[in-house]
Image (cartoon, rainbow, N blue to C red; front, side, top):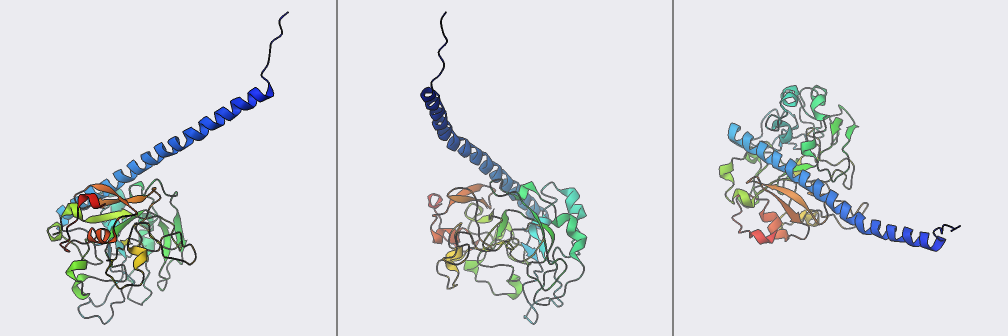
Length: 331
């Protein structure tokens, strides 16, 4: 009678080791494929935003402001500023909901009421953001990057106007408007002096027409990615609630005298030293994609911008009338 020979312990260990090596070789390829799929979805989301912005511009004669009546402008007494300055903190991403095929959500928004009551400098807030809580608490996949963490709905100091980060159940997102060197601290062109060289495509309280983009739509960035968690968990993006740092994306000129230049001179930049120094700061364009991030351009295209882009090129792409010559192989 023939006896059946079993595997020896050594043979079994060798087989297990071979399987482990194959899995180790396969895992990076699987992860790369998943990231490629997530990045493609991210690109599609930005293209949808681009189409919505162009449809809005066609219907209204200009792009939406990134924010209307920011509560952080502190315009009291400023020559040319509207009086009274009634804070609404309305975001451009909320204004284009109809063009984003979110008509039901657009209909639910009350644009006569604030989307955040954040007004720490004491400008008048008329109404309550509870009226728009259905909108501000909605997580919209079109405003997200699937490579980032699952978004949350956050509440902090609801209804307290003195708070910069008043959030009444507001949804996280991953998109910021290109507002150049300006933020929600800066109000409209009409009563804040803006050098033409630094003029971005989006500015609080102002609507920019396509005809004003004299640098060319293919050389001008409109909207870009930004990670949800930065050095402070309070920082944006928040697509609908116009709390502090919610929708403005900042890019500074390499010639700027601003002390925080390093934080905004390139994508995914972070300030040196300090707590959470590996994380980007507020208003920073950033992503979880390896090596760079996706940016929507004025012609509707979405391009991947490397972290190593030249700071002067990065700034040139953020302006609409700087007359800079930008080579397509520079980014």
